[in-house]
Image: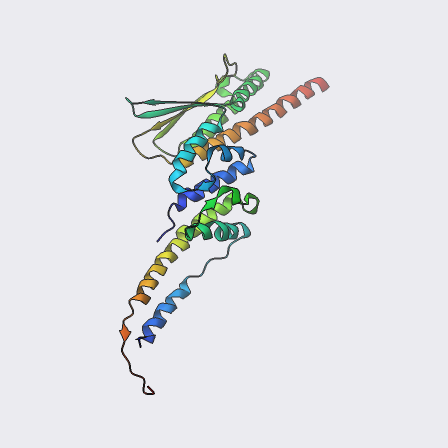
Length: 98
Length: 182
């Protein structure tokens, strides 16, 4: 059986609270969900699939700001968090009831 | 892990949206691949730059490491004819013609975004040949120029000339009506 330090695990999970997104208008939300959502998962994005009536030019600027101010930093945090979780050392314990 | 090519992908979306808004989405279909991909970004932007204006001529100087692009369109030609007509009616020489100077100012605002880009606007109120009024854009190869920025600037310039033609036509028509009424 492998167990981990609860304290270290909790502190890693605590870090995840920082991953909150700012409020977005409908246009930016569309770009975030339909466009960023695809490219961030490595999926293909096609111009013919974009509904240009659902956002304004300013929304693209907001999406760029969101990426540079929040999303890019969050991606780095996720990487750190993943590393932390993967590197939590296992602790050998023996349960009394076994 | 950041999204690979985020800037290029969203620059493409931005330009496509701009062209959609001004009713020239056919340029997107003619210039861009349907699949938005950052490694075809420069190819797509080059193609778009060649398609925005009706007339496009490109020459590269090996000696000076500069690419020269000559751009012209009926909206530029008509603008200068109308601006000239406005000047004639109001006894204003080309040098102090508000509309001609505004065109120069607009192009300066749009194209002064990089020290590697230079330009010259050659407008003729009495053109001698087709595409006589034209815009020359010089791209120096000393450094990197974002062709997406250049393409967007050229779209803005096209849009400005197009709207200026509508405004000038209206001004000249209204002035004609006023003269008739008098």
